[in-house]
Structures are given as C-alpha cells and as structure tokens.
Length: 313
Figure 1 (tube, rainbow, N blue to C red):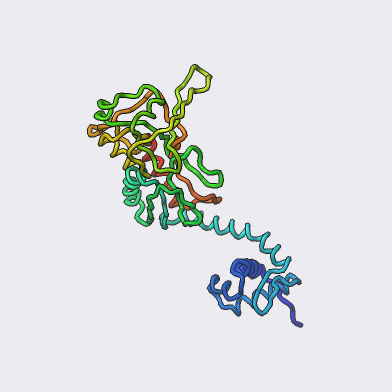
Figure 2: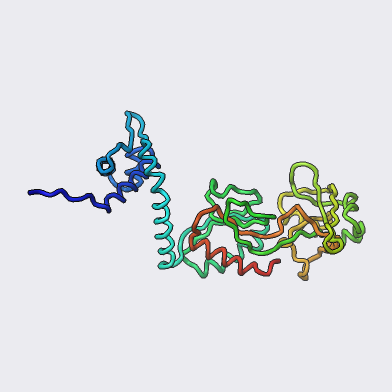
C-alpha cells in the first residue's frame, strides 16, 4: 500500500520566494535569470505551489504574465519577511567578515576637498577591503536615483525621508582682506554692505544676505536683510575666498573654507558682532537614503568622519 508524502515546507519557502521573483521581473524567463535557474524549474515550482494552495496565482496570456489577486496578496504579505531575512543575514555577515564593499559618496567641492578627502586616506588605510568613490559637486544630488550611498552636506535640517548623522556644527562668516578694509573701511552695520563690493554665490535673482544680533535675554534677535552686489559671483566658496584674499571685496563664507587663525591668512572678520543666518546650513551631516539597516562599511565611514570632524572647524 503506497503512501503520499506530505508537502515539504522547505520547498514551500522556495516556491513563495520564486513567486516574488516572478512578480518583480514580470516574466518566467527574467525570473529564472535573476534566480540563476532554468525557466522550466521556475514553471514547475510555480505549478506545484498552485496545486498546494488550490488557486491560480498567475494569469498567463500569449504576451503577458500577471499575478492573480491571490498571487499578489501572497507576494505582498510575505515580501517583508523575505526582506527581513536578507537584512538579518547581511547583518550577521557583517559581524563575521572583514568590512568590505563599495561606498559611493558625494560632498560639496570645498568641504570635500579640504576636509572629507583628507580623512578618507586614513580610513582606507585602516579598512583595505572597503572601496570609496567620491564625487565632489555643489549640486544637491538625488541619492537613490544617482546611486549614492552617502552624502556629506551642510544643511539647516536633514530631509525627513533620509537617515542622518550629525558630524559637527558649522557657521557662516563675513570676511575681507586687510587691504580691502584699509581702502574702503570696516562696515559697522549690515546695511552698509549695500555700499561695498560683495562677492556672492551664483544663484538666481538678487543676492540677499541676512544677519541677526542677539537682544536681551528671551527676546527675539534683531534681524537685518540686505541686498548686495559686487564684481564676482561664483558657485564655490573656494573661488570667492581667493577673490576676497586678493582684495576684490567682502565674501560670506562657511567656516570650513577658511583658516582665519592660520599664519598665512590675510582675511579679517567683518561685522563679528552679527551672525549670518539662512544662507548656509548650521551643521554638517552625513546623509543616506532611508533603510532599516545600514551596511557596516557605511557605518564605519560615518563614525570615522564623526571622530575626525568632532571639533568642527
């Protein structure tokens, strides 16, 4: 007397996973290629799953393949579990293995050249199995669309749909050369900047700088907006900094682009009792597209930058 073997649960998990691949790829052929198996194997396992469940999961025509309502529901309800398994295996793999992998990073030109790139050298010497691709651009990139794992940016607040780590504080400073100030005088109030040669960022519309000065305790700070103009507009702080050093005018610069305490600096602070606001961000962040888990290589790079930039500029 023959007996019928009960369905194997290990095959059930595989069959449901393969159904998810069919849904994602849109055809048996593409799903087979993604899974690294034959189209016949995918078709056989799909048929076995349909027999076990007792309802059609896929609707086929001569040109298309679509999931039935039952098939789509099965994929939707099991996809989070499979994704969790993948993340868990990846996390355990990170614990067991030497950190490795490629990390694609984007950063502003001046910040990247002067502070991010130098610290990458010591990071790569420490983790020889990690590779980094660094793209310097002042353009704000769409990280998921352009394939970046991490962005280093100075912003007022990171986007809510991203994961963000604060690296350090930053501030904006108004500077000019000693020679320029001797020729044209030291402004005493932000409104006087309208009469000075100002070196501004290349942005649409008129250049408007805003400053605030603290008032009495618990009072709102006094704010002043001033429209400025001058002989040069550029899209990077390094160009404007060098123009200010050459005596062409007054520049509004992020502190990471300056070295006011250095012996070689010819720049002087302008209106130090006022704080420039609203133009550059007030903190440096490492930002990445949201995901429940962060690969270990990225975690290590962020922590390295946090330690390197902890004291700010």
